[in-house]
Length: 419
Image (cartoon, rainbow, N blue to C red; front, side, top):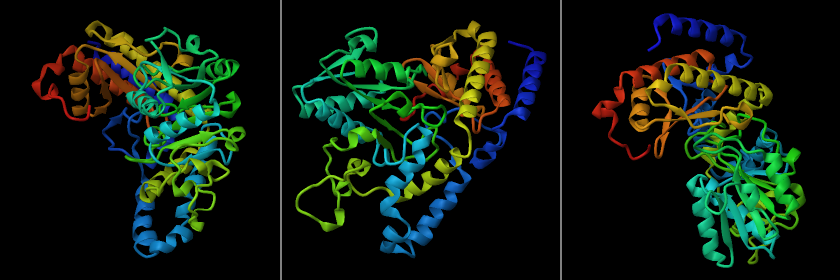
């Protein structure tokens, strides 16, 4: 183990960097225990202070007092597009191209069907074999209603996703940042390759929105989905979002034709006529209280420059990787994430045979990361509330857990339902 002198030097250097950090004041906007190093914002972001007040206002005034009038007076019915326009610049989209609604799984289902309908002469979906499972499960659900459609999976049907794209492919469903390794895809390159073959792309932004410049329109992207409860800090159960480029809106259709997506929902027509704009991706009534918790998080993020956020993300992850290299590799840890910063998102994945128990031991010591099967420890570095001193503390405690084989304690080895 490294001696006290080593860690004192690392901590002093980190403290100096924190003083110069342009984002240093942002942590005070969140509810995070002062003694905790929270490195799990890539799974669930912490609560902004303002979210509690926003939800209380929605409950005590808009619901309790305004009741049904709040659909108009508090803009409840308009929230999906109001918040969509707020979110748009965070992912590089324009007003009228983003709607906040439903869950990521539901929105993947909608966009897959929509993309297939735009390419009626094609029958192949390309995706990553190592994608987050819900993406693959939803593809199976789409194929259940479209038995003419087949899949090509990276890792099963070929080693490189780009090589699977040809003139038979209707749509490519791909994550900008891999949920386990943190590997970052080149959004521009994948989109260009798909378009050259005549295919469309749906980008899953769950692990990129909020910590980097996504650049959807700059890359000519077609469709995208993402969640708001990770780096966007919208809270558990926060709504998902859909992006559709304006050039597709006239002709695009999605299969869940509920009344909120109707062009004139309060005419209560017998036949469905889709809204001409992005609201056509709506289906039914939205969870207004969850929407209200999201509002302050989106507005807060817009106060900061995404270039500063990405630069700090890179610096935090590089520091953590360097410290792990210097202090932990002798204890069986290996880096799963890419070493090159331009190929990495905002979380770092490490492999260790006792990953689950090690993460539990870390959590007991105030460093909160998470575990992914079969042997992966993930640590998310959200620049708005993680500082350089936090990184040093996390690396030091990780070394203590591994060097001391603290993971052997039976209390850390019992698997909980949620891992």
